[in-house]
Image 1 (cartoon, rainbow, N blue to C red):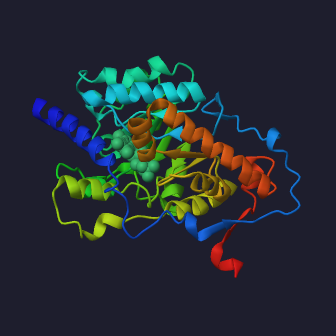
Image 2: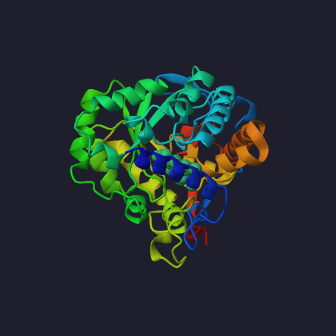
Length: 348
Ligand SMILES: Cc1cc2nc3c(=O)[nH]c(=O)nc-3n(C[C@H](O)[C@H](O)[C@H](O)COP(=O)(O)O)c2cc1C
């Protein structure tokens, strides 16, 4: 058992190291945002100074609708990373996710690497995290409540990662009973459940299945950003021409399609997967995201430019978003979400 725990911790460290390189990007697939352009509004009357991004998420007031995606925990290096990410979240008053809490299911050794987030971000929404592969094996769901309590989470995120489990050498690609397990877990938890992918996206049909069992939010984590297939292919020292490297539904496609479910379901739609610049961030909102989120670029910026670098990155994105809202005649994000973006092919 302890060998298994050491393996998990070693894997977490390898994930961090690989994600600090750009080798783990998609090769021939993008997140799709480049296929879109904004509709310029020559008659704009928007006052840049009146644009306000404050909103509510998980019953807490936040200053920007932006989430620092679930990344790490369960390995030595994670404590310092999480501490610094928590400082950023606290300073900007934005939500933050913890990395998979799998390690804490049966070992307390690395609990500090997760707890450090709430200790340094006292009032922001925090998202706990566990994999679907673990949920389907659980006999006692109350253990997940313990994970929630450990980080004083405002919601529990379950990550769906069939592609990653399939390619990972220690992977567990067994998801029989997935939807009923999530449904049963929902009855036991005192916080809402948010579902995310990890970079292969969520289709409208999968989203519908999840909303039918009552999940509160969907984070598409689409293709075009970090390829988790590539992370596992590189860990396996396999040939780089593995055709699964680029598997997945592009982020823009997922957001656009899942947004249409808002007509019939009440849920939070999080747009993520390769949101690596201000225009991608803005296009994710224009296509219908309630919140946007990023992972790898945040980690890379933290390591290269520290917490102040991450704060600058995120605030710059939202300053540019204001300019885009001005130029599209959008006084607020709801107006930006209302027909302010067009497929480039329709422009000619
Ligand atoms: C170093 C690192 C570790 C990650 N670990 C987790 C994890 O434990 N749980 C999870 O749900 N997602 C995890 N992810 C996936 C991200 O949350 C995100 O969905 C994915 O990387 C796509 O976003 P990106 O293109 O902005 O990186 C991790 C991402 C990175 C970069």
